Length: 450
Image (tube, rainbow, N blue to C red; front, top):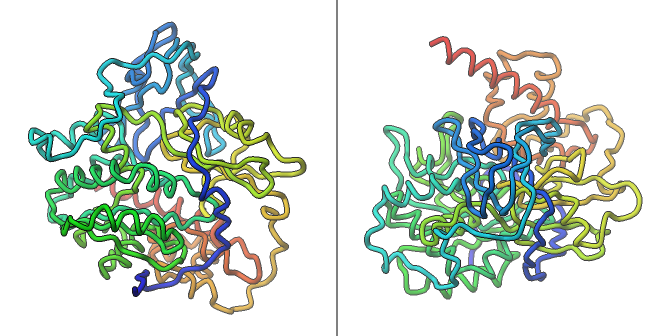
């Protein structure tokens, strides 16, 4: 079997999938759940509850704050104690809703049965109805980006979807939450794919899985053997294969142009396997997105594992469930070591995009002394977007914003391959991201004046 992969760049970090064979455990309910209102790309959600209000599991607590936004539902039952602010994974305080947990009473509209619902049993589900239920349930991208899912199913003028690609790659080191979800809920994921295909009005679906997950590949090939519309694509192990542009390239051979182009401009709609599962629950079970699969991992953790976690649960609760914080200096990441964000406190709570909590020892996290660039061009060879990272980093350092934009800094996907491969340990990505933020602001301001 010939493995597919993307055509430019990529690196091979150590996998460290130490929790791959650990079955998912349902995490204990927190004593207090905290819900940041900006759990997605776009406008933060707007609170619809206030102090003293009683809520159930699944109750709407914040409505979408704009078109590119998503509602938030309570993951617990109890009493709203305040609408205030909380530190999130960015390290800054942002608006949040605090709920004291009292019991575990669910909204009666949620179907809590284990019966598998299929699209064939529900002919009343039109593409429009599917999109509406996804939107109402607050489903966002579960791979980390947090883009509202319904928007991807409504292509911009001039773009036409030809296929839906499910991302089961999970190329980031350490993380295994998607893998466990695929092994434990393959049927629901496939119904989710069916729903996404109907919503997008396409007859072709793909599921991309790297070949370090042979059991998942075999499982999905077996379950789709009689469905000619769906193809399981075995992929070479290479980071960042899970980037949506890299996945489109690997699966279809098509390259997505520079921004503002998106995958649907070349006919593809990309969704994470976790998103497909959330779509199944939203559409078939009327269950809003309020819990997710999350890996809690680290080489020094006593008992790392995979958990089904209610949103709003503090990271410290999950770390304690794994035996507590290891001794010595540690760095806690929301996400994996390549693209995850270092958190300033374990009071930070699990949100829609929290696929992993990774604890790195000081030896793994400590940066080595920066040396002069030796002009080796390894960062250029590693870049999956065909950019020149050393140049972008330099232009950013010298605040050459106009040229930085011309060199397509907005195409950077923040994968960190350049910084990972640099033998001089230069903070290439750090500098690029600073410049990219400025350039994005300039572009936004320029567009607003048009």
